[in-house]
Image (cartoon, rainbow, N blue to C red; front, side, top):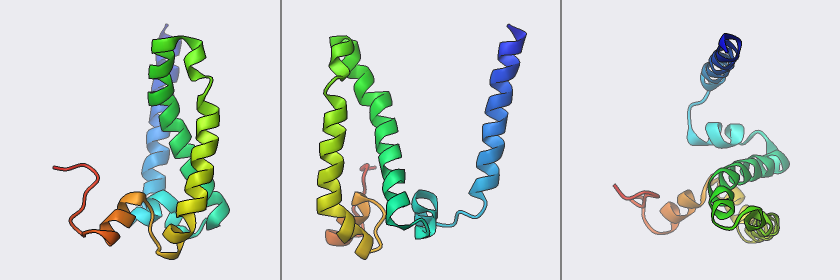
Length: 120
């Protein structure tokens, strides 16, 4: 039992150390989300996919499987593929050309600088 707790604690501390070391050169939202736009279109696409896929798996699919059993997660891979293709076809080029990082940036530029994702 002590070995497991030690392993978990060591893992968390190593992750924290990596996070502190890597976060030092981050100065803006672009640095954080897209490595300062130095990744290029291909790697930038993978970062968006990884973020989207990771969060949907943790939140959306878990709820669907809880409600419907294992069959509740069967449609999700098809939904991911369709959404990613549509987002890529409709939004990637305008976002990239406008040097925008998120859809919230697009809405802020299009409608109002005061526009926020989460109203406070």
